Every structure is written in C-alpha cells, then in structure tokens.
Image (cartoon, rainbow, N blue to C red):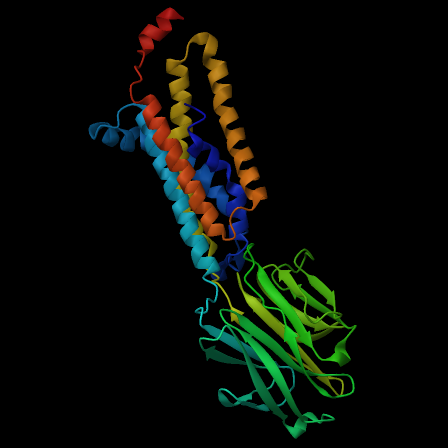
Length: 404
C-alpha cells in the first residue's frame, strides 16, 4: 500500500523543478532583487505550517460532509492534487520551451546568413531576386513534390565591402522537411565564400543553442560571454576560441555582454530559453561588428508561475504525509509502528531512485513529456492505492490502545 503511494515519492522531484526555474525570469524590478531557482521552494514549508491547522479546522470538516471521511480517502485525494501539480509543471514547461520549427514534408527552407557589413543582392533561379541587409539572414521557402532540390544562387556584394571579387555563383541544396543553412563570408584573401552549416535545433535541457559565425580573419581570436546577472560569479561565463565555424555551444539562459579579445562588442544580449541563435562577427580595418540572430525561442516567463504547482504539491504533502503518520500511529500494532514508519520513508527513497533511473535513461526528448509521464505514474499509483484500500476495516483507537 505504501509502495503504491508514489504520489508522495514524486514530491521529492524538486531538483527537476529547480532546473525548470533556471529557465525562468526571477527578477523583481521594484525590489531590485532576483529570486533564485531553489529559493521558490521555500514557500513549501511556509505553507505547510499554514495548511495543517487550516485543513484540520476548515477543510477536513467540509470534506467529511461530502464523504471523504477516512484517512485513506484523504490520501487518495492528496494523490490527485500531486498529479495536478505535475500537470501544472508540464504546462509551464511547454510555455517555456515552446514548439520547434516544423516544416511540412513537401517544403524546405533555405537560410542565408550575411557575414558582411554591407548589403548583398541575390538572384535565386527558382524563386526570384532578394537582398540581405548587413549581418542579417534571409529565409526562402521551397515547396515541391521533389524530395531534394538544387538551386543556383547568383550573389552580388556591394562594393563598399571592398572584396577581391564581388560576385559569386554557386549551387545550394534544399532538403524537404528541413532547414538548409549557408554562411556568406570571405576568406583571408578576401574572396567570397558560401559555406554550408549544420542545422541547429532546440536543446533538450532548455538552454540556449548558440553558434558563432565569423570571417577567416577572426580565426584564433577569443570570444567571451559574461553573464551580467551574476557579476560576483563566473559560473555562467563562457569563453571560446574561434577555430571551428560549425560548432554549436550550450549556453545557460541569461543576459550577456560579449567580448572579442577583452574588447566589448555587444552589450546586454538576451539568450532566451530553448532558443536557437547565430552570433555573427565581421571585422574590417580593425573595426568589429556583431549581431545576434535568434531563429527560434521559448518564453522567458516569471519564476512565480511555479507557485501554483508548488502550492498543489504542498496540499498533497499535507494530505498524504501528515495523514499517513496519523494512520500509522492509530492503525499499526505497537510492535509494527516503527517498521511501518520506516517503510513509509523507504517509499520516498524508491521514488527518488525511480526519478534518477528515468532521467538517466533519457526516454523523452521533450521535458514536457517526462512531466506527463510522471502524471501517469501518479494516477496509476492512486488507482492501485484505491483498489487496495477500498475494503480496509479501521480499528478504533480505544481498541488499539487496550490491546497495546
């Protein structure tokens, strides 16, 4: 019976909710203070102290009148509240992460990133004529019954860029259902180059996915991202040497200042939850320009949106843990009271072990699906618990005390 009450076990999944909090905005502007991800859980013991007398004096008498008049029925209802808390956490996670860009099976997208600090004119044989602003991106959608498609780009770079050759003609490949990305940049000898890039996707962790694109004359230089929200800590600071243009980096959500060899290039750049970002650098005559292009992102909602799920799990804790302690004291024989209490604590260990195993197995690409899986586990546990306790016959406290 205690083992099946896994809703109590899953309460100790606070580490997952703390990770969720790292993707949320904790700033309270009028107080000039930020709520840290682990601090939101401090409301749990506070509300436990408030709910225990409130439930004994108000809630339980009302529940008694509608038929929830035994400890095991209270525990069952507590399990439903626990499942509801994970539904809330799944909804919050879905809002934070958002949905990835999904192209129809008969459609492909071509992305051209302009690594120059001047406008580029482009003629696309199958689509038409376009222009790309300095350090910007062009999106072209292709719709056809053909699975893979080849197109020819004729590129004309503005003379202000002062390149060795200002024109380029090159074939590009578009795969249906995917994004094909190319970087328009220059070699060290100032020749134009169109490089194919790997496709970037949202990260399972919800952190920002960042790729740094640059011209060959910046190769070997150091890029540093300094978190402006943690001025006393270097935990979220990121540093990379520009060696590989096709490498992506996982960066924690936050606001950053960006430096090139200790020279500040960009100030207060926001890396949003579940975002896909391209950081473009261009240097000419010792003058460096940079721009962050975000193609996909989630929502940076406030951490106080975790309060409803925390309150629901607190209600479940009061109705489950406190009630089970009372049930053990009044129903278990004297020689079994300590054993039953220990068994109840062991179920918490089983729940923690279950969570560790599921997390390590990486069964779910999306964290939302993992939360829904926990909801299903809690509901199954509640159903089994109801079936096992449906015909339980309670001992009176006086009879139990006389036997002892």
